[in-house]
Image (cartoon, rainbow, N blue to C red; front, top):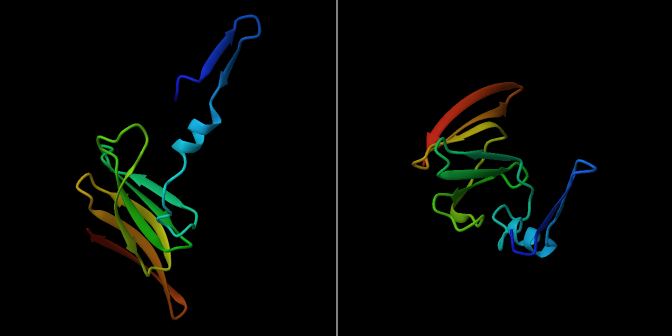
Length: 120
């Protein structure tokens, strides 16, 4: 937050009011590029020691990795994007050394198979 933020505590009303500079909020939650081609992020996972973060877009069928160790404030450092062919991602996991595991459901000939794959 910038120095423009104001916090007021009113003991009589037991209320806390926080004013935040809207320009700072927009900078925090806006990426300079569109890694999922403008499609919404539907899943987010972070590694156990919070060194690496992945985002998944169901519409774009992409997984994007972000370095979050030693970041400046809240700016994420892009690492890698992966396009996937799986029909439905059920869950995602990522390790601190950037190994991705995902469980997906693939529809074939009227039945469902559940697969688990591990890769970099």
